Structure formats: C-alpha cells, structure tokens
Amino acid sequence: MPRVSLVLSSLIALVLTGCVARAPAPESAPVPPEVTGTAGTEPKAPLLPSTLFPGEANELVGWRCTPAQALVTAATPQELRLWSAHGAWRLDPAVVASGSRYQQGELSVWNRGDEALVEDPRGRLECRREVTHEALTRADHPGVMFHGRGNEPGWSVSLANDVPKLTLSLDYGQRQVTLPYRVTTLDNGGGRVVLASGQAARPFTLRIEAKACFDDMSGHPWPARVTLELNGRQLQGCGQGIAP
Image 1 (cartoon, rainbow, N blue to C red):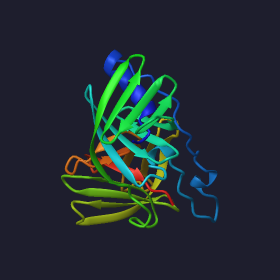
Image 2 (image 1 turned 180 degrees about the vertical axis):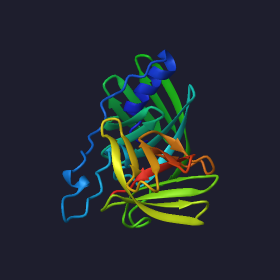
Image 3 (image 1 turned 180 degrees about the horizontal axis):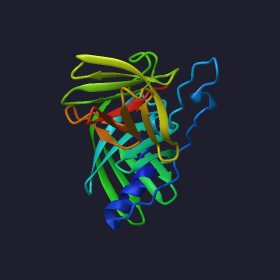
Image 4 (image 1 turned 120 degrees about the horizontal axis):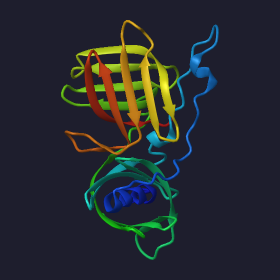
C-alpha cells in the first residue's frame, strides 16, 4: 500500500470536518540558475517538484474510499507516496503484525491486500484497491522528464529532460510541434508548475499540479493533473514525472 498516511489525514479532515489541513510537503528541488541560460549557452530544463514523480515505485495504484474519496499511491519498502484531490504527501513505514502499516503522527494507514483502513482522531476511511498500472519510465519515454496526456481529442505533452522545450501531439497525433517554454510559476512546496510559450507567435499555457488524477477513458491513476490552454481551448489530462 503506497504512502497513504499523510494525504489521508487531510482527506479525513475534509470528509469529516469539511476542512483540509495541509501537511508538510516533501522536499522538492528549486529552479536552477541555468534555467534562464547565460550568454552563449543554451538554457537548461528546470527541476520539477518531486511530488510529480512516483519515486522508485514501479506501479501506481488507484483507491476508492468510503466516505467517498479517490486516492493514488506509489509504494516501496522505504516510503509511501500518496496523492489526493488536494495535494501530495510522503509517509514512512511502521511496524505491524500483518499487512503493511504507515504512520504520521496520530494518523495511521493499515493495508491488507486490496483493502486499507485509514484512521486518525477524527475518524476513518475504508479504502479498496480499484486499479493498478505501471509507472512510466525513461525506457518508455527516452529524453523525457514529464509526460502528460488527455482524451477527446487525444493529445499528449512531453517535456525534454535537458532543455526547456516540450513536444505537443494534438488531434490524435495528426499534429505535432516542438516549442520552447518559460517557467512562470514553480511552487515546489505545493507541487505546482505553470509553463508558457517561449514564442509570442505560438502562445500556450501548461499547468501541472501534484494531485490524484484518473484517466477519463482507461481509469488509470496518475500523480499529476495537467491543463493545456491552446488556441482558445482548454484540454484536461493526467501525467507523471519520469526519473532518469
């Protein structure tokens, strides 16, 4: 069971009291000075917030909980990463006689097979594993540090891992273009990035947020929500950061 603890504490607060208390966000990397480039050198791609990545986990898991909530997790023996509609958290494993347990303060998550119980002083969430799929890797997307996609019409975006350029595939792959971008917002703590076109004649805005996302056709879980504004249209999708 991925690191559902921190996120779930916020979720319980949302469900039972109507108020979400944001837990400390995991560490994330700042924008390197090179992102703007220097005379005679090509600018480098920014370092994205770590909450957009599944870490060392090989799969992403979608959970449906009662009271109604949807969670995404990515787990390894060392940590549990969890995403909800309100943000992203990391949790550490705790000792338990059976199954897997994670704890953060008074919040605990106990996973046994396809079921998980999340508890804190305000109440509990009962969750069931719904869908699992493999996390994207650099082998799947060479040279890419973030990949997002959406449907109707089918589209995708890939951010290069070395320079501030992205490739857009639009209208089910009928159109493809590679464009430079500039960073207008990089909120490491909040897991939020906003990019704008580096060419005035070809404007676009790309927003990436570390929040639970489910593909509206396949139902696959993802750790990021992606919004692309292009040519007066707003396209919604999901995505994931891809580690080297």
